[in-house]
Length: 360
Image 1 (cartoon, rainbow, N blue to C red):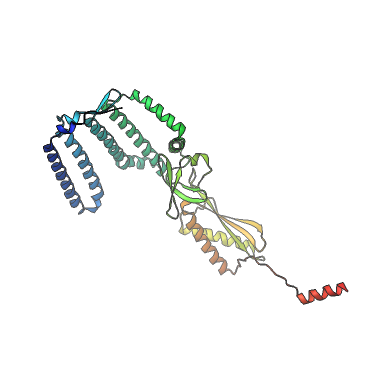
Image 2 (spheres, rainbow, N blue to C red):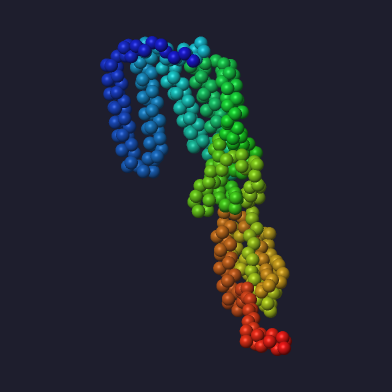
């Protein structure tokens, strides 16, 4: 890369033009402020209006600069050379304009056009995110290729640059490259997807975003965990929403010895029935089931199996069932025992006397 050797290019710059362009920029910004102030009177449309105004402001400024200085010598003066390509300020501005415009187009597609298609075909949240990422990456790659071609860089010349990058990956970027490729695999193979409830290192959370390098998981405590993408392909991850979102909830219960076990089964099934009437997430098919686990040290052990349709409601439904079980067992005078230990203490005086008699 050869840098520009002519350091006197500023001498060609007309400071009258600088004054004009600054004045125009200030005027455009004032008009933008006026529009945003007026939009506050319609708060329902403020966000959309602000986005449109910002869009027109940014591209309006760039197009004004390009058109006003379209005949200026300094705009087309060689700044540096890449191979045989002479890069000018004009080409750089055009390249930036193409890439930023592509980013805006991608946002318009993913925010306004694609949701209509998603709703029509009832696509889930994870599939929507996958399509959004694929379309965004595709648009940005095409924009970068167009911008490089506009600047005049031959894409075939990038093979040398690609070779340098591959060497860098071999020496120090293996982890980044692995996570990037893993992210692409996650988007296509979809072992996890946005909206899934997963368990990572005994921490329960929801997949919020799958980025190029890492996946963001939001825990039940509203904390965010950043997990490298390669983790989901190399380690064991529990996905409660994969394929079938239904989840079996197990409630362990222990009752005192001597309790009528048939009565216990009847009451537990009654609890499941009552909860299903107020919580649609509790399924009646498969039917709730009471498992007589066995005979514990201090209790007769049971398990209530209940199926729920949404794993995100796991904690809420489990808590509701525990409240109902405690209430119904209390109403029917069924004791929930706790472990007990009997401690036997012998009299020290008696022990000493017995030992002395034995000695004699």
